[in-house]
Length: 251
Image 1: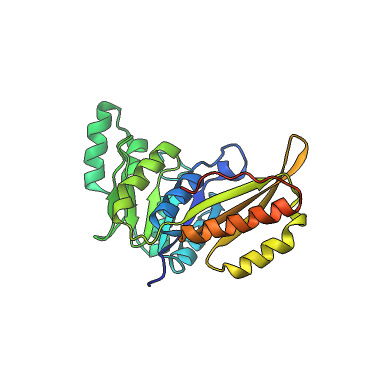
Image 2 (image 1 turned 45 degrees about the vertical axis):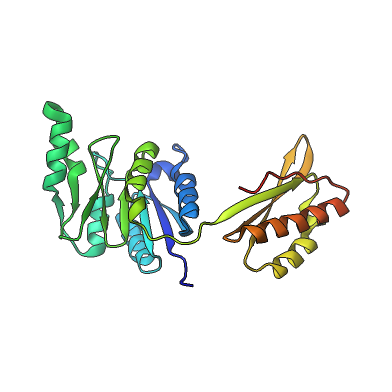
């Protein structure tokens, strides 16, 4: 069996790092990739600093099957993603004629130079536009790098536009079991279970609920049978500590 495709998400923008804007794209893209059998192995938040963006693109595109960027392709001075992508590939920036035509038709007399900036892409015949059904401004693909908008509903629309073209693998399933037990009380049991099921990723996540310690154990794998077996053993371990586990049905 061939290895599953891998991916990295580069979230570009000072507004994310400052905390002013809460990113919503990682949750959506990560979830969709799991459904498609693409392993999202890394996500980075990158400032609006050209050298940092170029370095991240070049490092990650050599490491992963797919790179997705979000943010920085709008009409303002601080939207520098396309310039940085072009630099990473040693390309010039041009206005795509088809994108200009589409944007002019969308905006009509309201089209101006700032809006036309959103038609800019790296040059080269291998650059493909990504359709944007929400507004006229496209994303684009260059080799294994997919450049998407930062606004969540637009980023999601662009992702769905390219999803059919992506090579996937076996989908990754997940489920969990929760109980009012401290994770330190079941740590040894979790380690033993993980050794017995190396094909399952097991994560333990503590929290406080109603002023009581609660632990949620999440199991992820392409093998739903193995997930079920893992969570049955975790539930048994929780019961031995006097807790009553709860778990949703495996979907």
